[in-house]
Image (cartoon, rainbow, N blue to C red; front, top):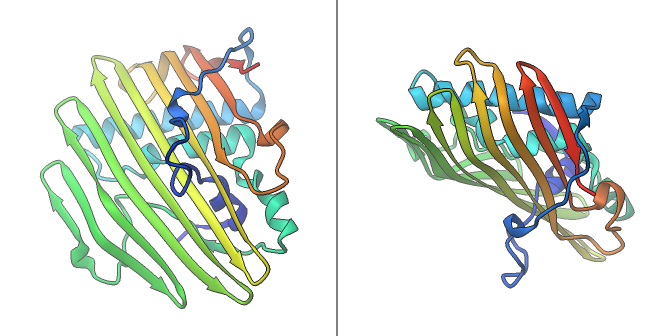
Length: 271
């Protein structure tokens, strides 16, 4: 199982546990500047999008059952483009908490569940019901489904991690949803991640949350290459730990990727 810092897990977290009255992060709109050449980090994010688009085609066609890179696309792109894995690190260091833990990874290829019968596989669908992985005092739970139906690939999966260590306990949840529709040489839809993390210590509790959204309207050549179209990537905070700023790497932000050909992308940044 992959390892990430607690900061990375917290940075993957948003609407779960937030204020029910808060506006849906998907309603957050951005104004963009002129398109320009991608930075190294933005190009890496675009390359991830291209790879995930190719994986999505394989899952939708039934060639593959691993939807992990597709469901995690928004967070993966944000991590590349904005360094999301370190967004919450300042607040966590202030609390004196930083530890490597198992990443929340609700993927179709997850194995090693405490009870393997929690996974049900039928034609075009993989379902998780009360799936858990227990390692010492830590427990990861997975519930939800991945499904393909005709030209559509969709998923709704929630993972939750409860981790206990000396001096604190940690709860992290990740709710991944998405719906992609495939046409002749096109992929249209949205990939979304809503996550939250809460850390309890003897002195205090701290909560952080945010959502990442990727809206796709892509053209591809059928051979794993994105040749045109756009992808808008947004990160919207719904809860910040006390003292966290709202500017710089902590700001709500958006990037608009516009493909000019295979591997060639221009990027517009939110103002």
